[in-house]
Amino acid sequence: MEFVKCGVSLGAERATRDVLKEFLGTYGKVPDAAKEEKRLGQMHRESTTGIIADYGLPITVEEYSEAIYPLYIKRWQRARPLPGVNRLLKHLHKNGVPLALASNSIRRNIDHKILKLGELKDCFSVVLGGDQVPHGKPCPDIFLEAAKRLGVNPSSCLVIEDSLVGVQAAKASGAKVVAVPSLQSQRHCYSIADLILYSLLDFHPELWGLPPFEDRIQGALAMEPLLSNAQIGDAVQNSTLTLIAGECTYDSIPDQISGIFFGWTKSETYGVFKAVVSTGWDLSPGKFERVMENISQAMNITDEDQATARDALDLPAFSEYAKT
Image (cartoon, rainbow, N blue to C red; front, side, top):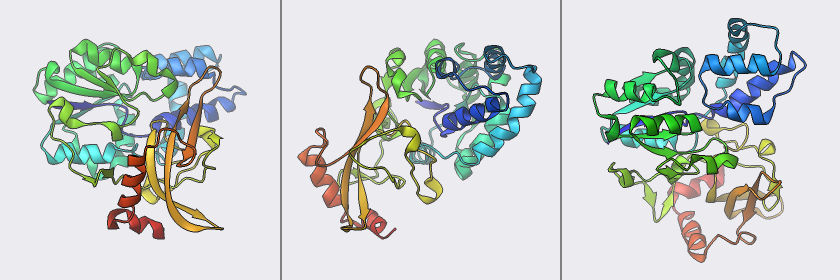
């Protein structure tokens, strides 16, 4: 099965939101969250036209694009591959699986974004922007063209998408679709996808006829390290949580992070000790916030999870991080 990868490579969605907030601020405006959610995944011109109309901006589409582009360039320098992206790209490329990148963004913007992937950007044999096809998502044109350039039938492709219009476009092309929603509050809208995941860390290639991962160590997955300054046990607003780990530094925790994680906790009182944390979303009525709980508070951390984490942290692949 061939593989078409879309907007889930970088944490660019958050950067985009920050840029719009900064740009509208120069006009004394603030973003409307509901309107911006509906714009996710739209073509550049469609999105720009809507923004100008919704906020009553006294500029043309061309003037908007010219003024905001430098802000995007600045923000994209801080974007990082989302958890699981590097692992998946390396794995598929190593196993000779053809890869395509298809996005509603204009090609110029894509070329700047994928620079953050470093050498991994060369894993893609096909890169397509929304300005290179007649119609953008939710029309299937971009996926049909990607399959054509890969030299395969769309029905033999697997698409990973983070936007609803992208999922709709991929399904319309005849491809199989795995959705990794960029907004967890909208998960219920992605039901037409063949599978919905929280993040690419949850992706199992063998379910789609692709070579399986072989990088787990005694049941644990060594991922890019994340350092959080959150008060574990409290409901933490996503915008206030900071993760820092060298090249894997995030301004705030990626929306797609959810599940059970383990690592090391540093305390002025107790020093460095092992920690197992459950993190997810509280989507109860009237709420939408990230919740992180430690091993003693989380009901969904099983004895098996605890044992796997504690044993793994004694292994060299994990114990070295206790020194950082």
